[in-house]
Image (cartoon, rainbow, N blue to C red; front, side, top):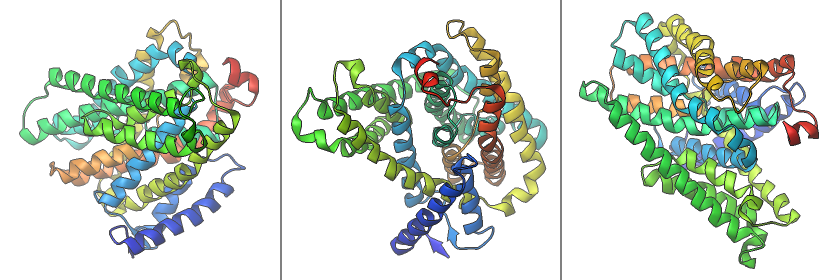
Length: 415
């Protein structure tokens, strides 16, 4: 069995994942099935559940490196595709979904888990904080395969980038309370969120501006031909620097991408050749996307899921069919300026994929020695599998039914 802890095995794993991933990506292209769902299935097949080819230790350095490097590049790439004007118009919606929405989702999941598992409410709230956020590493590839109206797509992608910071702060505060057997300190939680979000946003904007200047026609000439290399350095450097300062690395990567991809908004410009060269960033991003979702599938332990399957599936159902619709209805109508249509609200209620970041948080909780860690991991992975295999694969179909698919240049320009 191949393990990431040995470098020879790691290289062979990468080769296998890229080979099979390329085949899967091609096979899923015509039916427009999101390839991330297929990569998860590939991981399940290669992992201990089926062929025993690949084994992943969720807390290993190699696994964490792949997950966070891939997430940083995916978010940066997603940020580069943002239209800052459209983002400003939907800023209130994004902010409400990413803050109040996370709290509502975590509370609904906690109530469902407390009723089903008969465990302490604080433990159930920890579970809620783990799976409360939507996952940008999942959403961005899904929308790349099945694009929807640009304003709606960008709002959902931005929400996923911001709400990971909210959920990670809530997770940190609740985890500390669970370990110390103390009640939750809301003041501490709000202060921590402000610090994480502020540092992440500030570092991301600073790195994005630096990268934009270095590669623009207004800056030095010697880096203009290396736009893609600078982009990777900005994405990873911004993520690492923000995380090292105690901020949100994910938010930093997304903000850096949003700034880097819009030089005109800051009085700078790039040549057409530079924009073409920037597309080369998609190659390492695609490889890491294949790797992180295959590793996620290989990490699923079906033996752990067996005992909690029914209750865990019920929690996942509460997450998808109760928490998300309630969150959208409670938050989005407040933003009257955005004027979201009923069809757009309906799609928002359906799009809430959970993925690699919640898996990393669940692994961290288990490593911290929280009680009932086996149940925590089982329910988290059931939620991940349910949302990716059900919601991610049907997003394009639902968008088509609602008439929200983006197929024309007019959609891209004006919606």
